[in-house]
Length: 419
Image: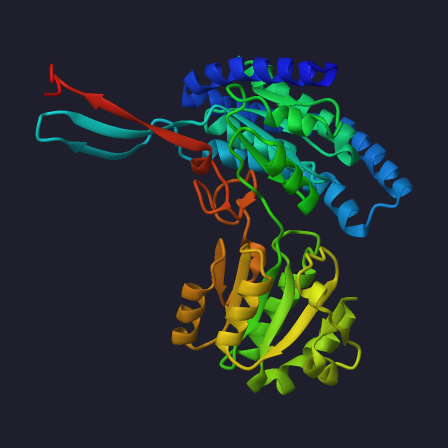
């Protein structure tokens, strides 16, 4: 066994032991730990922001993109939002122990299906340091322990955040190993975690295609993917064009580095002449580069021709693909061909068209007259999220505390035997 595998295994086994204590801890104790963690994060703000400044300086020296740097940056407002998220998670109903079904059998057996924690959750992520706390909070609330492996670009920030969160665990009398951040970012740590069948119960990777592929190809334990966000907004022929412009601007420009930001705008040919020139000017005012089909480029002089690869790319920057389509059917076909089944929206006043779009588009989140930027655990009322699953099994869309539970069947009899 390599030295790195030994280190990962030792940390994971300690976290697995802690998972048992967290699973059996009363709701009040787990909630106390979350509130204490929020206070510890606020108290440690100078140390956390100093660590973040180190990571930002290193990122700039390495020439990281503006999108990556934005994902990495913390300030007072973002750190306060992280602390508030801990408190919001503490306020959520505890899913552990919830009865989801109960029934009696003719032979007198009473069967209950009850939510229970998954166990030890490994989460592998890049760039966003808020994931460290969001993941820790959600795992703790749902009775799980977690092992976190962040990206090298955020190592100092993540260590400072994890140290503050551990103070909250200790305050509530829970083992600090319940939230374990790997203090190294070697690439070999990813397959090492994925090899720990019987220790790690599930792995959630969130990041670029390279990270997702590495985890899926190497893991020997179940994986729930947080995959690319190639999100679309379709402006239908019956759209309110003022509403459509506001939604498109928000979906693309409000935070372009987020996975729920729009990457492609589809515009019905019936409204393209009225909608696209004004949208082009609004996007230019926000520094957004447009890459369009031939019709789009004719209507927006500043647009450059889009390639097939552009429509398959998660830009994570102020770049928007634009295509004029002849019908709802063509819009749906484009989304199914080029999309990543993350988040897609239709803007229309025609309910029949909207219902058709919502039924046909096979994405985790589909919207009618709203921005794709709402695909977020906090916006869905989950407090935070571990990731946004584009899988179809167990969890899909924002993963909150319910998605971090499984279930067991409790069967109560009075002496029954099977004949």
